[in-house]
Length: 211
Ligand SMILES: O=C(O)c1ccccc1NCC(=O)[C@H](O)[C@H](O)COP(=O)(O)O
Image (cartoon, rainbow, N blue to C red; front, side, top):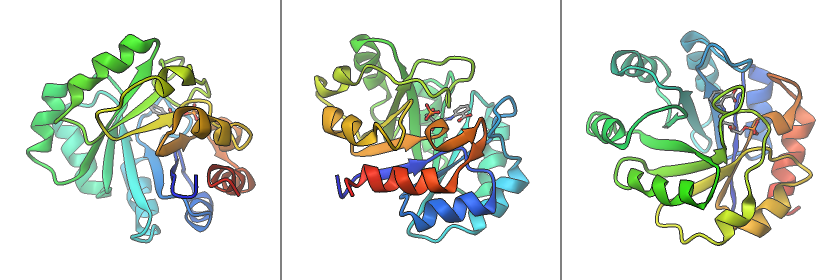
């Protein structure tokens, strides 16, 4: 578990970005999606991005945005990775890939083993798949876990990560069960929706590393 990558998602304040970086998160996520309690404007996202040292990668989350606003968002924030969490198709992502050097991640809502098989159509279009629980009230960030046994039984052909309902208390077991090379949390390190807790962020990173 020592080498597992850790993404702390839905950060919206300088203090919690610093806490994630200090705790050794490999990625921090900024959600640009107005209905989310974790939404940050492009201006806020760009300012938070500036605080992050090069060893920590910045992931900008977008949901079903058109091409022009996507390009504007990437230009304003200049993330290392763009994660799509909506209805984006492999064709759309493949087109975007021709126009940006950024890493492209695609979130997949997992309901059954079939969800994993179907997600392989993103091969060549996305650089990594993030397996999350199926969408609830929001496309992501619902604090719901997927059935981890589906992932342990699957032959992964693409780089991937595990999201959905991960907490400091269950992340070690999730890694043991699924073999996830990257774990991603949002509500599991919050004291209320959209309010990140610096102690929970530190505890999550420690637990993910098996410390
Ligand atoms: O976090 C949000 O509010 C959000 C809103 C819209 C799209 C995606 C969103 N989050 C994406 C993430 O990568 C979360 O970390 C992932 O869904 C896990 O969330 P959680 O189950 O709360 O840990």
